[in-house]
Picture 1 (cartoon, rainbow, N blue to C red):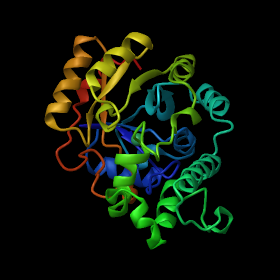
Picture 2 (tube, helix red, strand yellow):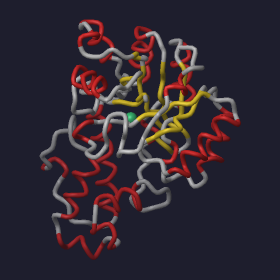
Picture 3 (tube, rainbow, N blue to C red):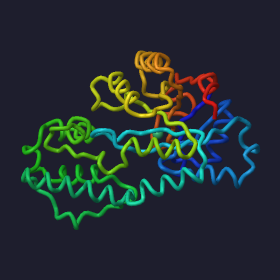
Amino acid sequence: MIDMHIHSTNSDGSKTVTEILEMAQKQCLNTISFTDHESCNAYDELEKIDVSRYYSGKIIKGVELKSQHKDLVMDILAYGFDCQKMKEGIAECYKNLTRASIQEKQIKEFYEIGRNLNLNLRPIEELQWDKNKEWGSIVFYNEMKSHIENKDKLASDIWESFSNFKNNHYHIKGDKFYINRANNYPNIKKIIDVIHKSGGKAFIAHIFEYREIKDKIAELEEMVSKYDIDGIECYYTNFTDEEHKEVLKFAKDHNLLISGGSDYHGDFKPGINLGIGKGSLNVPDSVIENWEI
Ligand SMILES: [Zn+2]
């Protein structure tokens, strides 16, 4: 069993690199990959320690990169690259994209929409929040809900939960609250180019996680014909059996490489375990045999 999709404290995971190595050892994972968001720092850490003290399996270099594909923020997983080249590529692509600047831009857009809908909101300057850790969307949602007068001005499902606000509204094109988050990010073509120039391979991550895409397989078909994609993540914590089979068939039919992983984030995504995901994930060692990495 292997796990090729893991987040450490170098991005938005709660466990350190060494903690994850120890866990991987306990779970007998034969190969792992740290795929922190836009960061190769886990690999710098690994160079400074005696890995064999913690873990006896194989480690393949990985990273997860946010990109813009149409109106979507799409995650691309990269594997087997040269870290120095990848770091330069990341620095160039994401130089103006600090987490804080994206969150700030987003909450301003929400406020603009809120004003047009005549919502009661405190002046944006009065909000107390940490743009480096919190989410603009959640801060805005809580502000909206802290004024009971807003209840009748909003669709009832919005009032029920943040996830309704997200999944039924601000992620949905054409909705009053729709925010295009994708145009913050570098184009997918550029990202794939950076991956290839770093000597790595580009995989489309967790396609069934994108609710906005109606026909996932048709979208994959289009992406594979337009972009130089090397592989598809076919084993994933949240995939149903049917989804897994569908995407695996797609990858095989198109002669694409296959990857898989839990998308482990430690305590930040409770219920998702290293290697086994929600309990039944089992990515076979054989999928990486033909990666030539
Ligand atoms: Zn991930």
